[in-house]
Length: 219
Ligand SMILES: Nc1ncnc2c1ncn2[C@@H]1O[C@H](COP(=O)(O)OP(=O)(O)OP(=O)(O)O)[C@@H](O)[C@H]1O
Image (cartoon, rainbow, N blue to C red; front, side, top):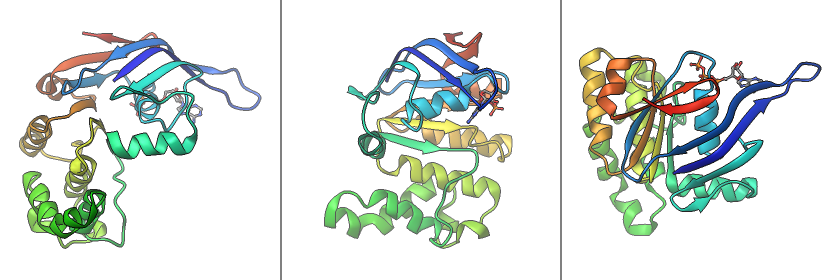
């Protein structure tokens, strides 16, 4: 994943623009596990949204898995996103009327008939890896916060994306479970960009990046 000279500001009507990122260059190699730290309001969520193609940069380019995201239509960006990027956010985005297992099955179900038939067993296996196999039949509202975060990670990694973008997704877990969940994510063959305020977890993830002065720097 490459970001080249990416800048982004927000403009609210009647106010001066807020500069968030300025000329950011960042390369995350395939399979690299990276953490992103930085004080509140420095642009971590903005950076994830740019990488996911949910936001367009003011200038610069974003390339994922060899495919440029910038200057594509909304629909094309959504297509690249669905095929190559897994996203797990602080507020999980599970479908409320589907069970944990069905949420994962939906994410698994893009591979044709055979994949669809295997989906329930594969979903349970994935939930077990994240330590929530025993909650497979629960609806999202019947899960604890930490369980929902782990189901959201199973959903985000189900389709074997090239890149997983995760925003503070173990914040509601105790230290031991958080470490287990991080280790499970690290064992999957994909690139990870993990946003956190927790420097011990950042060290566990691997290469460390920080946003300072509107730039992303390796530490
Ligand atoms: N849609 C928006 N419109 C205007 N300003 C925004 C918008 N989204 C974010 N901002 C501003 O951009 C800056 C960066 O926000 P962002 O959410 O990317 O920071 P963050 O590092 O993820 O923060 P936190 O750690 O608190 O989640 C902040 O000053 C925020 O107020």
